[in-house]
Amino acid sequence: MLVEKPLAQDLHVAEELVQLAKDRNKKLMPGHLLLFHPAVQRLREIVRSNTLGNVLYAHSQRLNLGRFRTFENVLWSLATHDVSLVLDLFQGHPVRVVAYGGSYLTKGVEDVVFLSIWFQDQRMANIHVSWLDPHKVRQLTLVGDKKMVVFDDMSPTEKIRILDQGFDRSPSFDAYREFVSVRHGDIMVPHVEMKEPLMEQCRHFVECIEQDQEPYTGGESVLQVTRVLQAAEKSLRSRVPVAIDPDCG
Picture 1 (cartoon, rainbow, N blue to C red):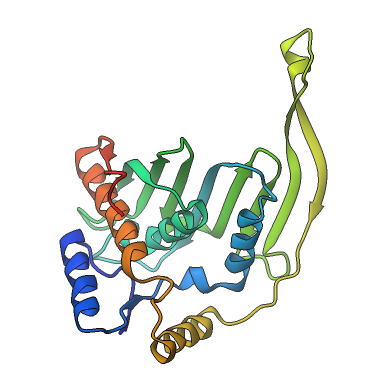
Picture 2 (picture 1 turned 45 degrees about the vertical axis):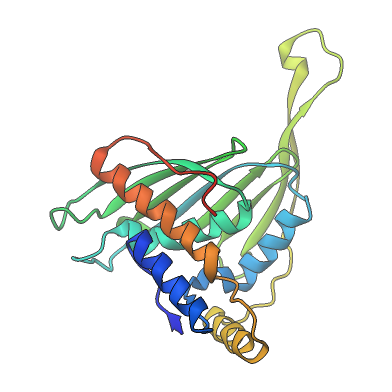
């Protein structure tokens, strides 16, 4: 069954659904559409090829004016995309989250949220989502110790830009300013063959049924997304960081 994201807003419910699908030999796939975006698939290749070196942190923005919701907050409505993307690219274990937000249109329903995720290997991701912003932004920046990359989904022609920018450490130095130097290099715009993400997602789901394979966004991957979002929701309510067991998943 191909269902809308998120799979559930309660981790126990999500676990029951995943187990139920497994017991009945059914394919359960939440629609984490962004992971089937051709530019994101190219971005995944860039990260896996070590082009960026060790990825240090990620910064994501998903902003717009509208569409306003009255039942689910912006965390579950929008941040689901960015959380699934960061987890997919980092392939690591999140251990702690903290989220702050504000409810300005409907009491108890956050219209803007700032979410930070820390990973077991010291990497971190910062996510900003809002439906009260004057600018429509769909952007992700990954900072590596070799290069950096920007994914801008609002750009019609340059979805991905690889920046040969960063810092270098000199093996011998007399002063701190000689030890760390800033590097400004070229900018490369790789070609991305544009395909409709929804079509790619549906095609993948059909192939999983025909070939009896686990969907890319099924099983433990979707439970990890739910785990992070549920912890973020707890942090929103308590206004303190919330730990995530790294041994889960």
